[in-house]
Image 1 (cartoon, rainbow over the protein chains, first blue to last red):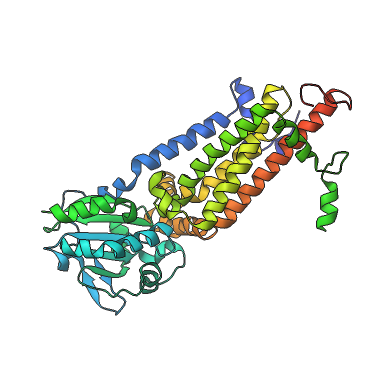
Image 2 (cartoon, rainbow over the protein chains, first blue to last red; image 1 turned 180 degrees about the vertical axis):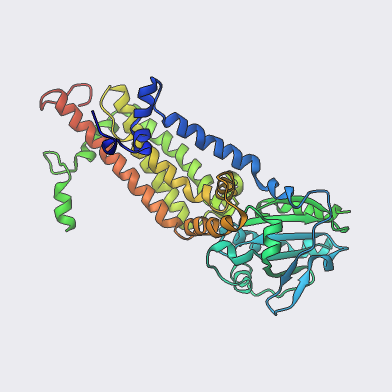
Length: 203
Length: 193
């Protein structure tokens, strides 16, 4: 008989399937797989839409502040009257890079539809180092300048936590001319058709 | 050092690594050659549409193909080739009722090869952290470290999974020859030789 000190830890017993054999069932590996599956389903169900629990779809978008590379501070409410693509990114994120290139390609169409793209780096770049927004835009889209159709900068901590409490590295919001949040999604390079359609018919 | 290690790899009478002998054993049969070719095409399509998902926020399919870079295409070919061989050897082992040791390593390699596409930059890591009860400031500290590190080391992760597949192939094909010999006391079993 083994002493208490000789007993393997719970995790080790789980790993070896000893717990399962004592209950006469299959190894507890199935429970671990079920837990993993549950987490994946929770992740999927939570998805991007969970951000809307704080920033509610169909309601007026809460105001936020951001700073452009020239040091000027702006508010989201300044852009009321135009459809807005508010896009929060991390500059180490490959899909954000591909999305930035897509925005640069489609900027004439977006501008023609009257849309403003506000692209903001998330607070602290989501805890991982990366280039500044200006460097990131230059690397992904070439030498473009900020224009009324495309503004970029850094989101404040409060704005990041409010609009992206789950810390998704690539999340955007579509806001209509009245400042009402209409949609939330990610990876504009994949969903550019939907963004263009929204820009053309936004109320 | 490499030479010393190379000598440790089990070899056949002609000095070839035993895994090659096992692989030749399987691919000598036309049906298994066809199976390997079919699986290669299947896995190639899978990897071509999956590996670039880091650029599409996790979206897999035709939409990911334009984001295929030369290194990712090369990895898709290498991974598909190795995985098709591992799968074929596994099918052969199962059909000839031989002991198969490569399945666990092979599954591990497939999971590893899908890590960059599934972890970066999808909502998976943040949602799992939230499901585990992490607060917003904690998520902001952790998620970037995990996803950023995965994004930066994508090539390393893929190279690691290719290496794992090589190990799986070595175990599977090498073990095949070993099993044949063990079963017949040094003589080849007619079902596998």
